[in-house]
Image (tube, rainbow, N blue to C red):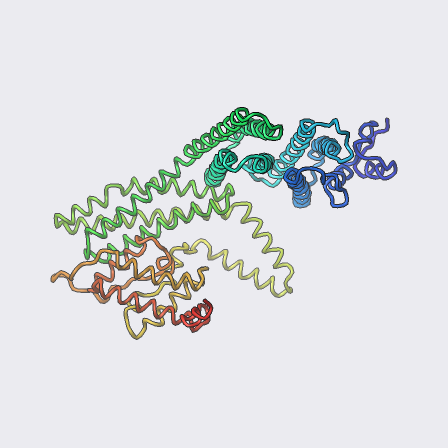
Length: 573
């Protein structure tokens, strides 16, 4: 038998002999990789309606499976162009793809309208399952090879494919009375929700291949039970047989649901601890603001602002890991989680001691406690910022973005690269002294004294709104933030009056940042209200002031055409 040395010659051989790839393999010839892939494409093409005699749900599921395999093939070829050719991978997957063509051909034959009548539904089902299994095997192999080549996680939650189970569920809905179908549908929906929750948890904690491997036998059992249940309805078995099949199916689904719920709870245990510690720190800040009203405004303001900034930074690490579940973002989240644990235990008793010192009129000790707490938060922010830069700036994503920017710069005229190169050199020289995002934001903050001054209030509100929109918030959200500020003022503790021995320090000022304005957490605004109280502003006056700022912001946004006026809104309605 002749041996075909490479894919190119094999492809030519396919054209000369005009034989299918399965026929070539049967004759001892080596079909080409391109020929095999073309055969897969043809089996689900519009010009080859071999699937048309299948039930619609099965046909749709099969088309989705094949499309997924085609996409994996394209992705891996693209990855080779970016990295390097991988002949060993194609050599290993070629027999798997050939098996896909063979199994799909047999499946199609079993469903053809011209097929012999003696082909039973069981035989069709068995042919379908073999085709599904071979497609999933080849798809998983290529996806794992792609991730390994691109330096990504080799195990992913999307290796779990429930398309066939969904097709069985769709068949059950057609076969069963609605009240009986509900016995199965509701548990399946709950299980799928638990699966999705576990996938979300993996974004924070990383892939859990052992869990998915342990679930595979359960998933297979669910599929088998659903197949038997559907068959009992198709064959019009007695009611007690149908009931037993439903109960067996529901029990296997509920078992899988409990499995993923337990796995989720175990995986999220460390995240729950982080959330609890952050909630405890918020409560401590609120307690100090409530008990130590109007005490040491400067120290209290710094403590509240530092605490709010730190908690916002830590929560941001968590959200970024959920939004972009890369190893780099997970590493930063895990660093933030450890930081929260350390900061929490570092200041755990300090707020209570500061409050007790205040009650005992040991004001120097109370002031010292406030400043110490603020210092711990400031160090936490600095450490998180340093860790974020160290982790994320060295990530493959950051390197790819830098390479893309460099490629874009090379397309500019010659003068532009030189100018950018000079600017880049200057930026690199300045980089060690680069300010953290928190400090940079404070530099763009608005003075609260300017907000309080009637002559400068309107311009300060406009600047604050511009700063928020520059940070990515839309005009509607900015307008609503001023309303939330008023609501927070109403619910925040304020002194009824200034103590006689404490006069407002008009030289004291406070920066109000867009992050504080847009943050819905009342703790982030605690420093603002504490400062206003130190200036002798009553709670009623603060609420009125917030209303004035809200009206100024609305007018500014309407004048710029960013939001509709009330009259325009009524016309739209």
